[in-house]
Image (cartoon, rainbow, N blue to C red; front, side):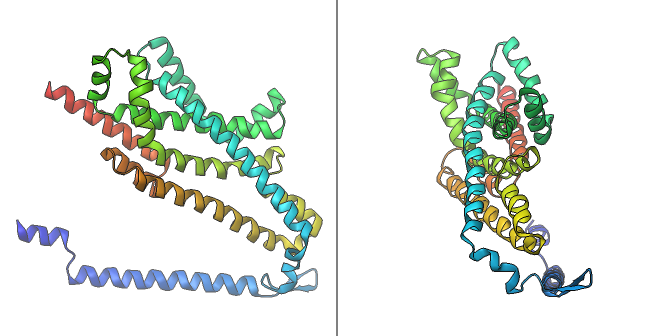
Length: 311
């Protein structure tokens, strides 16, 4: 048994050597790609018989010294954050409602809710924005917000429903034993625990929501990308396209990485609960929220099967 453990658990000299060689080759390839990209961007280029400076030339970054440049960028950032904040609140509220309705014991509530959730999950967010804009004539801002609320609300609702399903059955039985009804047990006992367990996954989904605000560019909403790559590009000219791209990328990275860090911090703070909270921690840091929801559902189904077989 010990030899089998050594054979399958600890890599041998050849495996370690192969892993080291593979890591070195991969590192060299990545470094080569980075060097090629830097030299390509820094090289001068010809356009219409005119020699244009490289992307890192100081003349391509002069716009950063203009006050109006940062005012427009700031307006785009605030528009992005405003849409994301309102959509996040609405998505969480809608998700809570969907989770309760989807887990209802009343068939005429549960079944139509399941159909509606599957319809909203299967509809592309951009198509939903266009539909709301053209049919309801809400304007670009509310088209973006409502579409993000509907789509992300369904995913958050499924995450919360998976959290409810993964709770031990003793939670509801204890609530019922002290005189609570089924709905009262869900609201006062089960739902707070499910929300706490799935909170890192919900935060991770809100990161996705923030990135999806960039789709507002298509429907005419002046979020960050439209403010930089459209408005500023038209005002400054193509000379600053790479500068605008770099500024937009850095801003998105700072915002999204900050939210991702918050999700990981939150998962560590909540990892002292049930085991599924540790799964939520991994989901918040490394796994797509959709995949994490499927894992939680599978674990809940396995627990239910074990409980039924024990009886």
